[in-house]
Image (cartoon, rainbow, N blue to C red; front, top):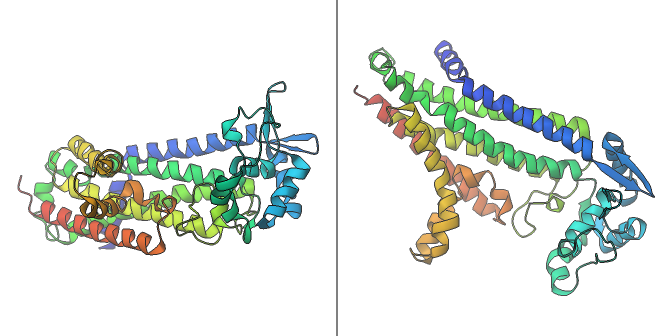
Length: 370
């Protein structure tokens, strides 16, 4: 059995489209990191540092500013460095991670051109109470987060790209055998109608999960080498993206474990969906098209249909929870202020859906008659 499973994994993993896609994704991540290093700058006490040196200098400031995030800390950063702004004369940004963070999160910089520090001011009143004050109670730990903020952004995009690659790579698993007429032969073998189908399904799931984990591991090691482990113990809600009103792990490292777990769940669910479509299609290209359509339906529902509320509040809410349990949104559940119970519900919906899709794929392929 293990020999057959290895052969099925080899067959599934040998598709060039998967590895070409992965190479392009890794090249994109590496190129993006090169751009980050090239453009990174930190202005500290009138001296500007570029690239890796700038990162090191920003990290060294943690001895002065890392710790409980309070209004006093924000004021201390502002008193020493002022606000982060763009100097048109020198064609460069003036500031460092620490004052850039408070400028982006707690000032009116988006309402200005960002090139005059005298126009930038801390927000006041209701805007301060709703957006800044909840972060400054002293129960959150601040630290150098830049590299891990960038990792979150890159990881979100890479997961989406991986899902698209896997649609193309996994769509031919069953449909290609229909086209090549090998299914007629395989289904007449001793294990063709039972064990063979399960092994083929398992091989697809293992390959999809394995390639995703390899890409994540490469990214993690790359960012770890460049930015170190500093900031991983900071409070996750201080990252750009996680909502302060929904469930969020306590630390940045915990947040990334959640993020990667949701991404892996999305990969497994998507693979199960694609296998079900593939088993029902006699054409590999058509399988790709239908799988892509199924993948994008949640986005269309959320952006176009749900706002119309044509099905009533109750039914729309039920469908809404189902849609955010699908691969497109499942990997981003951390960004929608969901409670822990809601995220668990969405994962359970994903598990049940994946199980049903695997069964449908098994049944459809087993009953195939050329």
